[in-house]
Length: 202
Image 1 (cartoon, rainbow, N blue to C red):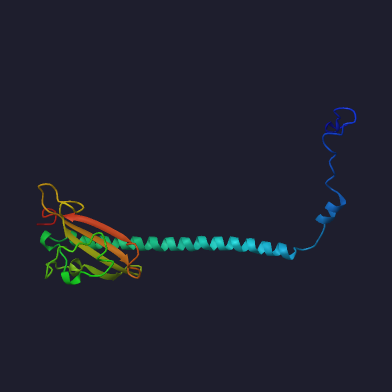
Image 2: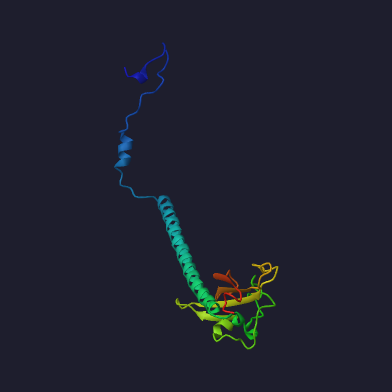
């Protein structure tokens, strides 16, 4: 007698019932059945398939958006660095903006680098017109539109960075690059640099 049919005492049923054979006629008949899916099963399968396809499509779309923004940021950083190089090549007295080119509207005036007392010169002493221009629209290597905004302020005790103790005042140059088609969105790139009379050629 198999172990699972052992009795504990007289008149006591086995602890486990005899297992039914797995190859009963109804089981074998169902396995051999050639009936197709019912309408409900087909609808459930289609819904699950659509959910999977939509999830894959959404992930591809998110990846494309991320790659597109990364490309814009890379181009914006290149444009910002090129603009900053113009100021690095100037003398101290030539680092200024043409007041006629300073926008009076947002987002230029609402940027944290903006000051109503920016360093200006009229006429601008720089031979580089783009260095005097406070705001200009350019086309990047990717053929997309970007706006390059420049801010030049004289350091004080409250600016960042402040004027060094017993030191010379600094000219703080900030270059901000924005998406030319979405100016009110977060800037794509921002660079800041400080200049004094000794490092800017006097």
